[in-house]
Image (tube, rainbow, N blue to C red; front, side, top):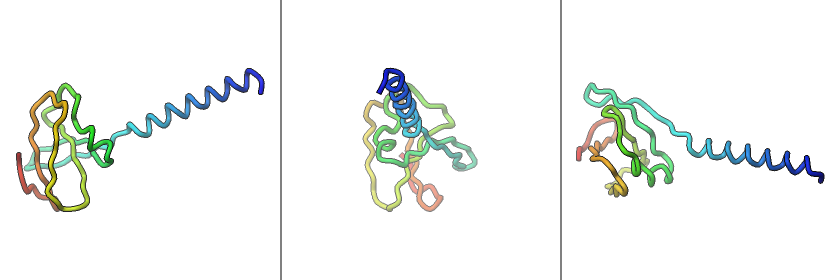
Length: 101
């Protein structure tokens, strides 16, 4: 392989790396209607997203949040590592509020 071919391979590898980073950092969002108030939420669906949660952020808009999606019905515990602001937790099941913390 000549020198220009190596440059092309490195360029393709760099483009692929950036594409993979973009795909893994893309965040889905939704709008929830809670008691007449609309809340824009990021969806935490993957284990990685759930582990990161809102930790490390400096704040969150008053009409924003994060929705942690779990398929099974069970009692869950949350650890708020590196949180820089207080949180309100709203527990939902079958489209209804079932608890507040």
